[in-house]
Length: 308
Ligand SMILES: C[S@@+](CC[C@H](N)C(=O)[O-])C[C@H]1O[C@@H](n2cnc3c(N)ncnc32)[C@H](O)[C@@H]1O
Image 1: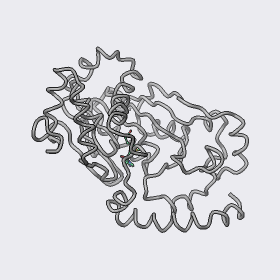
Image 2 (image 1 turned 30 degrees about the vertical axis):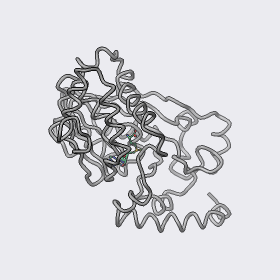
Image 3 (image 1 turned 90 degrees about the vertical axis):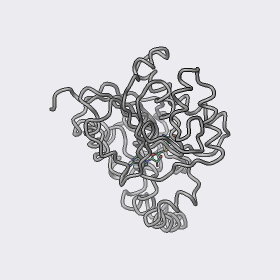
Image 4 (image 1 turned 60 degrees about the vertical axis):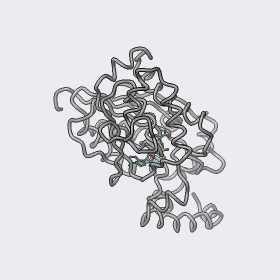
């Protein structure tokens, strides 16, 4: 970013720094004012329920577990979900299909039992086969009544500093979708994951490295903002931390987890990489074209059975 870019964007910079102070000092107010769901725009009950069903099945597809083998795989498992968004719908499906309980952890208090979210939860429960439906109904304080809240014996929702679970040797499975790119301290999150997993247990994450609406002309031009200025503008809002896949490789290795799979889903075309490269901020200049091209990816890792 040069001085001309800086002056052109001065209004945006001042606004973003001011609103970051609200997010820092009053995160709950910030979340309410911005109406965040974690999924972007509200799209209606049916599509939202479809989205969460898709999220649930995607994990098992990526783990090469056939749909009819999910109940056996999940049977009695203790699951952690980082960053569930405004409703623990994936957690509900995990318990419905056999998990004993799910702990959902978030850095922001996004959970809302709004009329819309209650309808989504009801629809998810209603569309389940009988055995799964009975299990899902018991996830609520009053069985079958989402508006009564979640029964913490099955679905616990915790908001903690930096969204860390603080669990030790507890989880049989850890999942997240479109979360790791928001975490403020990636090393701490992977250390938390390592501590929370039981030896031999798996963590699976879908990571979305796109700009989340914060680019202007090129999908990667949000990587041109200098890190300090980006931190002042967005440090407390949970917007993308901008780390690329090279950082994830390094952090997984430091954590002691084993990488079982790391694969891109969508990659950016070379022409757009060539256009943005001369303006990249310092932390992204060393990246090779391939790492820069990854716009989202799956990461599957496992805690080794013996401590490294
Ligand atoms: C884009 S939303 C995704 C929500 C949900 N997984 C989905 O697919 O709809 C990102 C989520 O990550 C949460 N988050 C942000 N920073 C976090 C952190 N350090 N630890 C855990 N969750 C975090 C946000 O509050 C939000 O719930």
